[in-house]
Length: 129
Image (cartoon, rainbow, N blue to C red; front, top):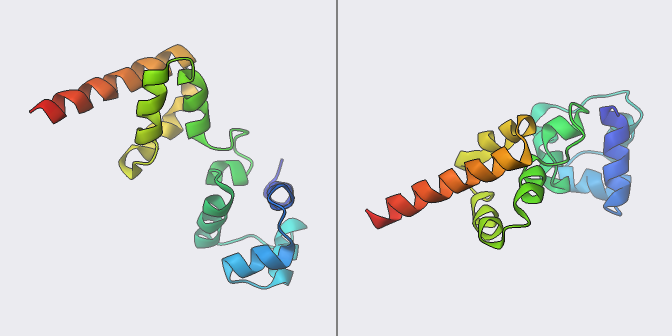
């Protein structure tokens, strides 16, 4: 799916009109319309704002992946372990670990759990020092 279709789909899923989305972004309704028909592309700053508004990655917006947010994949991998899930819910808020989330696309659920366990062990060791 390309950017234009993704944007229209996300906007509709969020229950927003083109005007409401335009207001959130500080652009005109016509600009949103042009994005949605593929006649115009947003700049980097606008892509980031759209990513934040819809809670998806820029890669998802651009159609480079079908994973809306890399952190969702990690959540699915650890949801059967309440302790890891609780720790993960704290970790995913950290900006310094965003790169890790992107790398999970290449890992199996088992490997994702192992990475989270390692991070947890490091965090615990550092807090005991």
